[in-house]
Length: 103
Image (cartoon, rainbow, N blue to C red; front, side, top):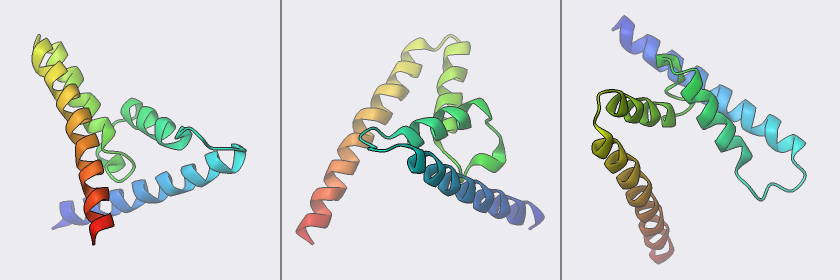
């Protein structure tokens, strides 16, 4: 039970940190035509990968797992993970948006 509470608190902290950082970054960018905040959050989350950053970014888990596959000599599985994550993720967003429009 203690572990669950710690995970919930860590997730809440990460989510709050993500929100604060997004506001901070976009308050300094005059015309945000590029997702600067998301890029900074994903890269910094990958650099600082810890359990409490799960609410901050899940991209860190994706990059960690991909690097682990590469470290273990599983180049093709790493590339499959990257390719499927990006292509299927984009397709899922598109389909979700289309469904939302229909409803």
